[in-house]
Image 1 (tube, rainbow, N blue to C red):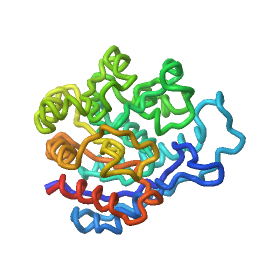
Image 2 (cartoon, rainbow, N blue to C red; image 1 turned 120 degrees about the vertical axis):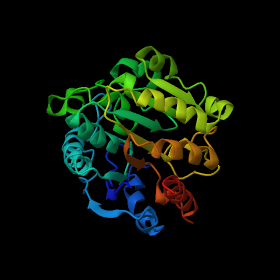
Image 3 (cartoon, rainbow, N blue to C red; image 1 turned 90 degrees about the horizontal axis):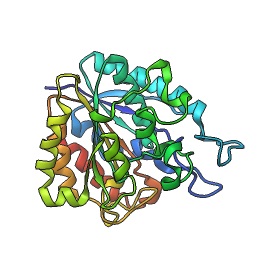
Image 4 (cartoon, one colour; image 1 turned 135 degrees about the vertical axis):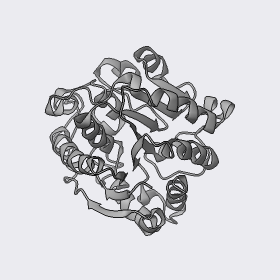
Length: 299
């Protein structure tokens, strides 16, 4: 039996503001899922919180690189310290974000320990970097760039923390749930990053797709893999409470099967959950669904 540890990482530093006078509400994700009884339902040990810096883009403007970069770098190191401690203790961290940039903390923690893989369940690749701005637009929001940053693409103050660039190798990454026709698919394929779109998952079945991916996530060269779960992988009909809802996403039963196969692998070492925004979910229905999916995956 694995010892689960529930750890809050309530950072919203990687998202653009929803309006000029508001901040992204994803920093409330952890509290909202805890209100759904997730700690008790997981039978997890309390891991506390890694407090995030204040959201303040100052005088940042397009062309200045990633906003909040200095704060993100500090937070990534602090979060990595906590995650590394749990991994060294043989515990399984369940990290409640936050936006997708919290995945950098997990990637850095694993890189300190050796070579690990990533199973990213996400509606988009989050692969924007200076080399593909013609496709994805200018860099700025780290929550749309964390996979690129983790694989060494982008500014050195985020890609080369502690001189450990890259935190992840492309061949050790598996993506699930990209929308069919995603503009990043050709570049991902050229980089050696395997991606299963919603259409492929639906055609082959979520379980078979996940089990096939495990063959690549289990090479002798790696010591295990981490799961990154972005709520926007779900279709907006069931998960509207995200910053960029896109039609054509996975349905709950499909995500449940996919996530369950991956989590039950003995090589899986941790999970983070991101991007659900309680401010966009006044009746908490989407939050209840997300908590059910996370808890159910461990059952």
